[in-house]
Each structure stands twice: as structure tokens, then as C-alpha cells.
Image 1 (tube, rainbow, N blue to C red):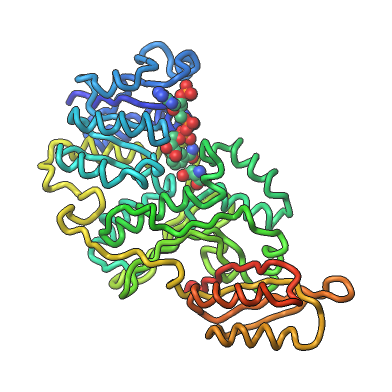
Image 2: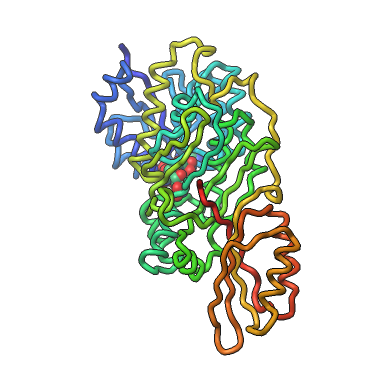
Length: 434
Ligand code: NDP
Ligand code: HSE
């Protein structure tokens, strides 16, 4: 059979990985796909640099749109990133009747509904396994492997950069900036690393996972997002002393009143599996009503791991392109006309445990006043400890039982106004994951 012809847009960290994997495992991939997968043209900005990598036999151009419109190309692989050129190219490729594979979670989180609707109308496939958790086949697992289940919740470490930073800060006592620079050198970080450290990249991925898990439209604008840039290293130390580790989590849960969709750092028990996912590794814990909890672990970023997912999509598209579009797996796991309109809950309505740290004057009545304000808001204290700070002040750390976030916010506003409180209150969520 004739090879399937691929146009590759972008030859950076992921694009070069795709080139390498397709060359390295060419015959193995062909045995699985039933045809050879051949990159026939590549679009980049710096064509001379690309030429050094791919040699003289492949067309290399600066004109991405020329590949998209080339009738000899069957599949467009978009690995440029961003929401401008990438979006135009993907929509035009779909309009041209070409299948698309992309790793671009930022684009899909913002424009996924438009892109999947266009692909459905045109009868083409958009593969995006690499957009979530790099090399872990989590999309395939949720979309196909767990298809018998009513999915209940999903918790993931889905940003390698922040997990790498938190791991190195904790285990080697290194400062935030030094570890971030290391992650950038290793190719984990996004072009704009604030996307990583402020939780935006994880929220892009979580938004896609929530849609796949619950059959809801992609709603990035409804996600609650908090990153790790405000984390103090003393909180990492206090957390350890209390038997927890701090991880940036993406959490989505189907509750009777709606869907939780949130990304934030959280204390999790040090002996649970997710707490021991270290470095740039990712892991996603998914619970279904029939199967119970299931865990997916692997490299969430980097050239070859991410390329592994891109190429898996290429093989799927190669196998399925002749199938009747109505009989393919739906892009978001549920049939487009069966998507549900379940509200995404406001963060104030989320219930979880809390870690609270504040500096106070060390004098009689302080603890009693703090406990009263927490109690008035319906918040129950699980444990606390006090650490002296100089002669007349102390840091107080509370762990609360599960409470409603809106109630915690109300109590913290009142606590901040107390005359003996000498710092802002650090508030981190605690997820027992049980
Ligand atoms: P890079 O910045 O390393 O590569 C981007 C590539 O796109 C470069 O080859 C660049 O060309 C090319 N490019 C940029 N603009 C244009 C344009 N206008 N026309 C043609 N080519 C262009 O990005 P990554 O490989 O890291 O990321 C690609 C995508 O994969 C992103 O969506 C990212 O979020 C996603 N992703 C990345 C992961 C990772 O580990 N890095 C993991 C999972 C997903 P030139 O080199 O000439 O400048
Ligand atoms: N910047 C992302 C991360 C790349 O650190 O996980 C993979 O999506």
C-alpha cells in the first residue's frame, strides 16, 4: 500500500522527536499501521537549521499554509504551538479534508469546541493524545478503555515543569528560579513558562480531561487556576513535618450539583502514590464506578515521550481514515449530540481540607480568638502547631477538616483584620485522596 503522507508543522522539541521516532521505528510502526508513515514536507521558521536535522530529501519551507493546502499531503501534524498560526492552519487543514494531529493543549482548551465541531462536520479526525500528559496514553484510556464507566473523579499531576520544580525544591533545597531554568533547558517548559508555574498549562490539560471524562464542552474559562509561584519553601517544610507533600494538582469531580474543575497546589499524604511522583513525571488517577481507581504514570513532557503520543495518533488516523466517520471514536469520547450541559461549580462551593499559616503576637487569647472565628464559620480544626518566631511572636499552623471554600474565605477575611495577626494568612488546600 502507498505510504501515508504527513506534513509536519514545527520541528522544535516535539517536532524533532516525531521525526526521530518515525525514522527510528519505521518498520515497527508500519507493521502496526499497515502502511509506512512518511513525512514529506516540514514547515519551520529557520529552514537552514531544520535542513541540518532532516537532510536533503524532504521539502522544507517557511510556508505552513502551503503544506496545509498541498493535495498530496494526507495528514497535518501541528507542532508549532500557540493560538494564532496553529489555529488558522488546523481549521484550514480540516476545511481541506485533511486529518490533523496536534499536541497543542492551549489551542484546544480555548478553541476545542470550534475545532472538533469543524472536524466532525467535515468527517476528519483530530488526534490530540500528546496534548495531555505527554507520553502517557491518558486520552485513549479515558476515551476507550474506561468507556463502560460513569467516571466519578480524576486527579492528576499534569505539568512536568512544576512537578520538577516542587520535587527539586523539596529534596535538594534548591531555589525556585534555579530549578525553573533547569526545566527550561531540559525542554519541559512551555514557550511562556508562566503558563507552567501559574497553573495555566495544567488547566488547559485538565479542561480537556474533564470534557473527555464527563462529556461536557471544553470550558477553560470556568477552571479555577492557582499556580506555585506564591509557595514559600517554609510551607514545603511544614507540610513534610505534618506528613504531607505539596503537589500542583488538576482535580475534576462529578458532584450531584455540578463539576469541580480546579488546578492549585495541595498538600497530599506523603505515603500516597501521587506524592511519590517526582521530577518531570506525570500521573493521573481516574476513578470509574465500575473499575474503581486506576492510575496512569509516565513522562509528561520532553521530545521523545511526547512524540510517542503524536505518532500513536498518526497510526490511529492511518488505520481509521477509511472507516465511516460515524463509526470512529468521538473526539471528546461522547457522541457530539450527547454532550451534557452540567454546570462547572464555583470554587466557593468546593469542599476540601485546609492548611493555614499565620504569624501572630504570642499572647493570651490569640488561639481562642482564632478558634472562635473558625468555629463561627463552621470550620473544624483537625490539628495545629505553633512555632516561636523571635521572643514575642509565633507562627501558627492549622490543618482543618473538610470545609466549604466560601466559608474559609469568610473566616480568613475576619482573621486578617485581628490586631494580633502580623502576616497575611497562607492558605493551601489539603486533599486526602481517599
Ligand atoms: P518549540 O518551540 O520547541 O517548537 C516550535 C516549532 O514551531 C519550531 O520548529 C518553530 O520553528 C516552528 N514554528 C513556529 N512558528 C512557526 C510558523 N509561523 N511557521 C512555521 N513554523 C513555525 O515547541 P515544542 O516542540 O516544545 O511544542 C510544540 C507544541 O507541543 C506546543 O503546542 C506545546 O504546548 C506542545 N507540547 C510540548 C511538549 C514539550 O515537552 N515540549 C509536551 C507536550 C505538548 P523554528 O525552530 O524555525 O523557530
Ligand atoms: N510544559 C509542559 C509541562 C509540557 O511541563 O508539563 C508538557 O505538556
